[in-house]
Length: 488
Ligand code: DUC
Ligand code: ZN
Ligand code: ZN
Ligand code: ZN
Image (tube, rainbow, N blue to C red; front, side, top):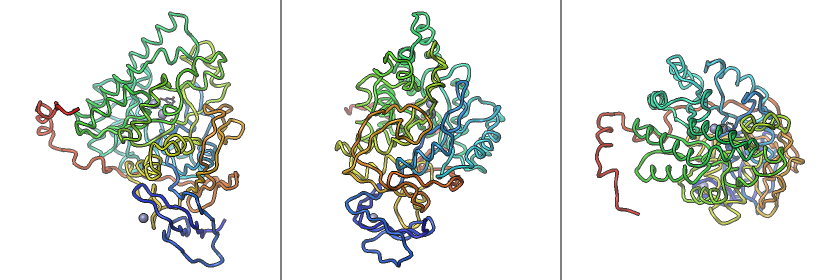
């Protein structure tokens, strides 16, 4: 396709502002955004009259080509990204994992896995154990490899979980590097105990997954991680907030002035746990993810928190396993590979759930699906904006059209879809990635190898005002007047 593009007559939306304007793109970069741009015959023109022209989605939370629970996700970088592009997402940040405890080996392995990428991507790194070598490697990742965030597990006892002593060291290390600490917040000891109880009761099906790790365990771990991050005085990002228990801990800390970011995922906003009780194993097992999808009511609480800003951006935790892989746990829910799809559905489901329903504005939609993520991970305004100089990652959304989610029509390699049969208003009709039209007329035109690794520098805006004088900070924690208030 042409390297010169004009998107004509649409409503151009950024997180701060929307306007009627044309967007002119050359060689993958947005050159100008203004009404009535005149161009020559060599320019491909796309008519966006009556449609929204918005920054492509950025999914802050994916697992592509990841080895996990005795198998490997069915979507690799190419298939996961192709699915993403068909749904209006033009960049993702993947959770890469160390290889044999080595962060550098993990980084190199994932750079290889991502070679066939058809859209831009960045990396967070999951830290699955802690020692001095890991601490030193973290510095290399931040200073030389373009990674500015690290995830720690309070769950997965016996494999990925780290204890509070190590978590405190990890938080201190993140702070010193200007890297954002992230946590998977479930109490791992509690989960192990809950699982044991279920097995003793003879509950071995997918419903045992939900019953064994209730919201109280997520609330406890979220509260603990937030308080320890507050003690160290470093920002904290809570991945996949699934319960109102966790959300309320985040809201409370934010009220006290702490920098805590909460990321709901689409499954938690849209689904409820009744599905885990479906009598057909394959149908129920596709919903198994951790933390689990919660009882009806948690979804509404998370939606409300997203509309008021307590939760700031939406991810997916896209981590797909097909029916055969899910069947590894047919006799024991503990062995069902954890994960759901969503990278292709996120932009559509969030539009319908939040904008079409009237819960948020179109500018807020851009903020929670794209801009906030770009700002937080220090790649704004290269990403997350339709501004001169930004990358031409753009979607055209028709608010009057609709889309149906189904494994029959989706582009992910998995054979099920947790949103099967859902029809939503609003359709991404065109996706432009790096200045190329890659999705148009329900057809993908992706180019393997065209996706680039996006390096992310440390010290995002989240670190502004972070006090380096720990003695002063600690004494402020002892001042009761700052800890209590009569306000509602
Ligand atoms: N939860 C999932 O459901 N999948 C990947 C890892 C995780 O924590
Ligand atoms: Zn403007
Ligand atoms: Zn997780
Ligand atoms: Zn995840």
